[in-house]
Length: 285
Image 1: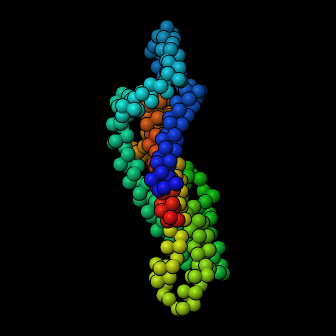
Image 2: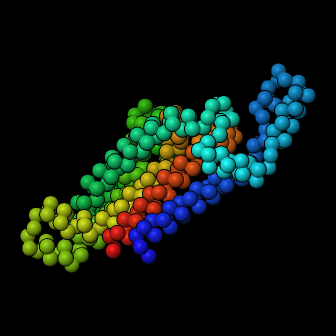
Image 3: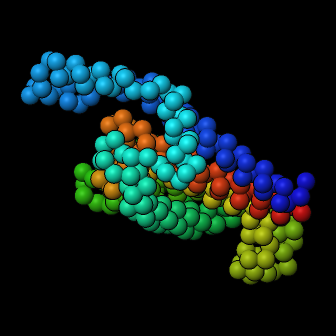
């Protein structure tokens, strides 16, 4: 199979993932408890008859299949629909918040890779007491995202970028340290070390080219981990990004918002996987 055919297959799988994500969001949201409830039913200023009419309006909504068909028809025309909570187009909400989330993700992933690489390189090169360098990262793995963010918020120290950096660095360090340790003791690298080459020559000419595909796969994993952690981080810190928008949409049963944010996150993961597969195929060709 040619490279272009592989890439088209990967894009096709991404489209299927997007469709399944949208369908899953629609059916899960409509089956969630309280989806057909209206906040006005809890307001004492409305009479019993008015509150009954509110409940009737909610239960008179079309079926899940009709909602899915309507949503896909709008998506084909580039329309994400109208927000049920804010009363504005979903595309406008996403456009306003996407830059904030992207900036947080970029800073968090960049700092996490810098920290994990600086720690994994010396830790993988030594044979004794390497666990002492990896102990802080092991402890960070045991701390939930919400607990870490809440602690930083209560102590008024750090912020969303710091929490995301620590979460990603704790996970990336383990993979990087294991990958680098295996690479350090590869036969060709041992021969280069025996010839007395300097450290920067070993890393630039022998170490990194041998593990570049695994590093790229780890970068994809970092993106997926960051996307899963961005929702609680933005909610706890009150960051007006896509994660907070998704949480607000779930709490207010705003189905168009949920579909829009889900498609963006699923599309980011799917396209990253497609490019990763394309990169590996080019490397082995």
